[in-house]
Length: 372
Ligand code: AMP
Ligand code: MN
Ligand code: MN
Image 1 (tube, helix red, strand yellow):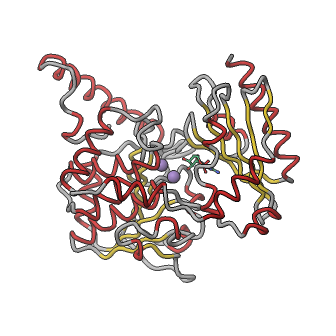
Image 2 (tube, rainbow, N blue to C red):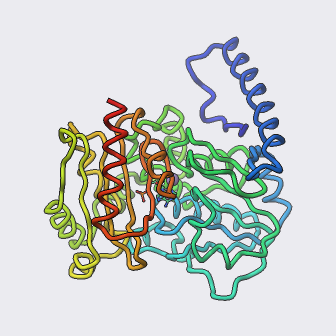
């Protein structure tokens, strides 16, 4: 069980309850250890590592690849940059690779230029670190480029993460991978500065929907407080760069999406679709649609929002959001080979827009009926 940093230590509990908490934590650690031994040799290797174990590996090795998932979001990129910058300050050689490289939208992140696409012929690394990546093949073409890495570290917050890698911290209670990276850095006394703080703030702000989603906890605000104070962050400026700097075409895209909007099951399910033709006509970039699904989720009657996007490889990218814990969109997406979190998940499904729309909405309809 990963030890949390100081930031969450002042709860409502008095001394006695705090001791009780420590006892519970010890029991959980023992359970995690048992789970680790039980699962080894099974279908997959599930390990629960401590921050100390990961800290040791970080100190004892020299060459690192820090990676995250395809079509990265603010959490993926902010976490990558924060950990990479901390490792660099520790004197390590670090490559920060992503299949998509740097995105225009996130180019304001401190040291964003470090983020590059991997070279065609990979490199040798002591350690490869996958961040915010639910399944290993979501690393895209970075996976092959680091194939010879001796040690794999997997740090993530997706419920569906099977625990690939040699050292694993998967904490589904964390609202963002950035929160776990913060705890790792603080608990291990790793280097920390303004640029690292700004990247972590961007990671946490984006994955919590600006500190709104249900997993946003007192601990999240304590971490944000520490980032803002110790990192001397300008919150207004970061928020403007994150949420008020979209290109005009994003609004034009939203206008098109709204034309395709469908409501079913007494308006409890809402969806819209983006065809390749529309995307081409508007010259949208993949990153432009991040967050647009929130317009559907924001309707009072809506429990599940679904976004269908036609891809060039004969698949459809499905994004799903739920407002009700009883309607687990991660489970729905797993049925189609995807994954994610209970309230936010996705999948890439082979078929035409119409075919995928029909079979996915049918599944969502069943789950919403059962959940209500
Ligand atoms: P998105 O709708 O793309 O913002 O994704 C919602 C959440 O589900 C994110 O945390 C993603 O990392 C995760 N996710 C999206 N697509 C997949 C997939 N094909 N497999 C596993 N997880 C996914
Ligand atoms: Mn992500
Ligand atoms: Mn995330």
